[in-house]
Every structure is written in C-alpha cells, then in structure tokens.
Amino acid sequence: MSISTAENVTMSKNKGETGRLKKRIGTMTGKVVRGNKIGRTIGFPTANLSIDKEDLSLEKGVYGVRVFHDNHLYLGIMNIGTRPTINSKDLKIHYEVHILNFSQMIYDQILTIDVCFFIRKETKFNSLDQLVGQITRDIDFVQKRF
Image 1 (cartoon, rainbow, N blue to C red):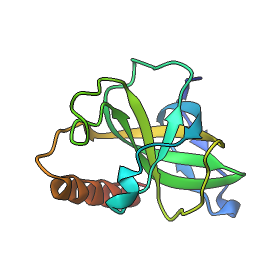
Image 2: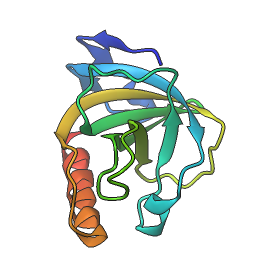
Image 3: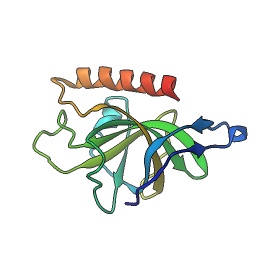
Image 4: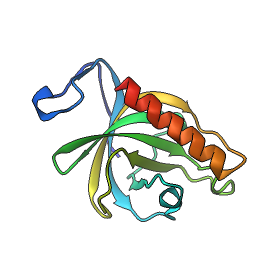
C-alpha cells in the first residue's frame, strides 16, 4: 500500500469532480478482491481491497473517500477495521469501500482511494438492521460534506 498526504488537493471542476478540498488524510491504492458479499445482501456492495501492507496509522473506522477508477472519480465511504458486527472473531484489518452511484463489477482491478475525512469509529452493532441504518446516515453525511 502506498500512503501519501497533501495539504491541498485541487480537482478539475470541468469534469464534474468535487472541486477544492482543503485537506485530505492520505491516498492508498489496492486491488479489488472477492469478499463474502454481505454488503451486497444488505444493499451496500463494497469493493474489498487487498493492500500490500496494513497502515496502522489510520484509525479503525469509517471515512469519507474519493475513489478513482478507470479515469473517473466517485464518492464513497470506506470502513477500515475488523467488521465486528459481521464477524467478531476475525481480527484481520479489512479495507472495504462502498462507492456511491456505482454498480460495475471491478474484481481484480486497481482503485486509488483518497481518504478525505474521518466519520466515526468502527462500532459493533446488535443487528444488521442497526448497521444498515448507520451506513445510510454515513452516506447522507458524506453527500452533504462533499
């Protein structure tokens, strides 16, 4: 995984991108691998990223991100963590991105992720319904923030 930081990021407005974002946390690149497809079953498909090495400097939690794929920019949310609601016994760090307004199959393709802002810490919910409600609120927050 490569992580780089920048104080100012300027995107081209003529391509419908997000304009100026004053600060971002960092950038990472990873290959999309097959997961358990749980996100898809609850209405939020995710791109599971294989990262060369885990970056422990990023806190476990949910982030607002920009996703670069095939010369296009998308907004999304990314969870970095152990997915405690889904599998509390798996302690491996997972990188999962839900890309907004996106439905392509992108297995084995490379994504570049701009990690823009922290939303919340990773949480173990008592049910998938509670998780779905929180993901919906996270997406609303990201759409308003960008």
